[in-house]
Image (tube, rainbow, N blue to C red):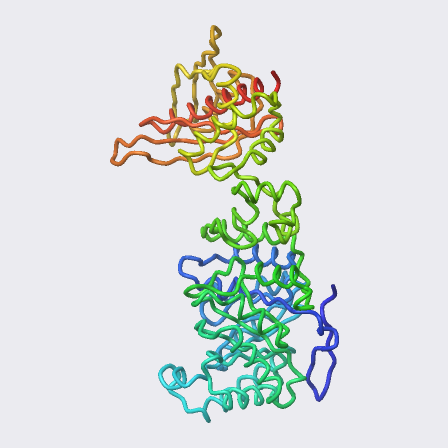
Length: 526
């Protein structure tokens, strides 16, 4: 879907609104408001990398930062404006000349620059923060928008704390902003105070009472203090707003902002209710979410809508049966539509025979129908003791039923040489029943070295997928537990090892994973 075009009128550029009747612009403020979330700060290179992904995602507007606030913020905005050309690049300013000058300088090479200026308009903000009268705020609005309009072809204006602003004064401020050339009017719920019906009514009132409102796009920016940011956003869009200001994973000040992925998928899945569309490539939602999460170190909650680990996972036996019969019984969108892998059937105490049987088949475990009930009963005993039953547990169940559970590989000896002036080296001795294998290898570190030595000793071509370490007892002499996930021939296997020496625990875990892989082959290929 193409970006909207503009026409010139009275010396100003206006969006051709007929092209937006059924389209919502997505304004992403992850790099500005999202970064204001405590602990979520990013360096210049990280912000640039995320901006490139946002452009790839199809975001219409990227708010790159608040240039006047610091040299690093300015540098990030300038870099993004210089290099990102498919999205409009916005920079935030207060209603001060120096802020607007800094934004204009940062955006000087942008293909599509936008200055986003704001001023507080609620009684509590004007009295206690600005210490200004309503008349003074009106004049500051007039100056800021006019000054910004002389610096950039496109100006967005935000009356901060709009949802707690007197409606008559709000309409007056917005009228002044339009008169001075603002073509986007943002109505922010700055403190997450409003509720959906109330917010929709506010948008409707603005559309009815503000003169020349047809010359501007109404935008909405919602915070999640009451957990209503997404609901408020879509209700405002349904009432006629045509730009949604959002962040990846909903990060932002305090409880965060409306989540981009949730707003976009709400519009897509319920197109029958909204008749609205976006330019977003929804298959990039999950990769973008993971990228931001990894970059700032904020884990995605497992139950997060659209991108959480459990969003397309089913444990309940009733749900699993329904899903296996027909996907739409319990899923309103496909995982592939948001860039996820296929639906995951999670085995646990609530799982039924249908889910159990399907997972065995997926793993290539074919057993006689007469034996399936016995295997399922063994599965339920494990499920009662664990939150989730993993594939390796299934291998163990079947091997107990049809073969030996003993690890075929045993780590008998491991030695390390490492230091800041030496090449990390590991030596291992592994027993495979009557056979003994010894090998040594170097690596980027002692863990890498021991994994290479084990692979060399056993002639393995395993790929390490995950490596995790945690202490399972307190104190300096804590026992460390290491878990690894390896992949061989397209099949993944988990191994675990524990020791007061974390390097030894790592070696044990890798050998254990390879031993489990052998068990897998025995079970799936009897």
